[in-house]
Image 1 (cartoon, rainbow, N blue to C red):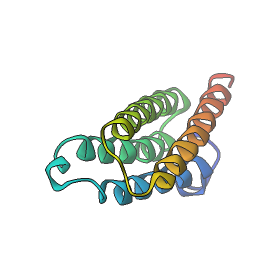
Image 2: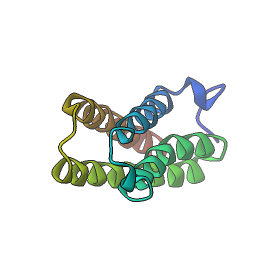
Image 3: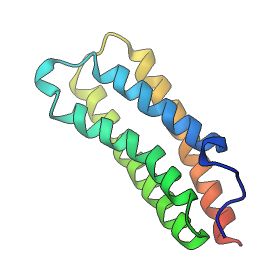
Length: 122
């Protein structure tokens, strides 16, 4: 049985995942134009994938939802890795933005873990 929510939009984890995607898009806007199809594109896809997998999985049964939550966790780990690489390769004007994304991503990853645990226990 899918999670008891009238909509994935009610899930705080989905809302925060969307916030991450918006922040990532803002951050990559600071990168050199030659990165448009490099790490910037990968980061955008990873960030969007977190929220997208939460949304898609919420419309399925618990077993499938768990699969999508784990996929979202994988995308979060990808994004975390990309942020680490980005912070080592480029000197960004706004280091606070990258710290903010790391903080929000950590929160979302913890929420995804808790959500997966609660689904697994049912």
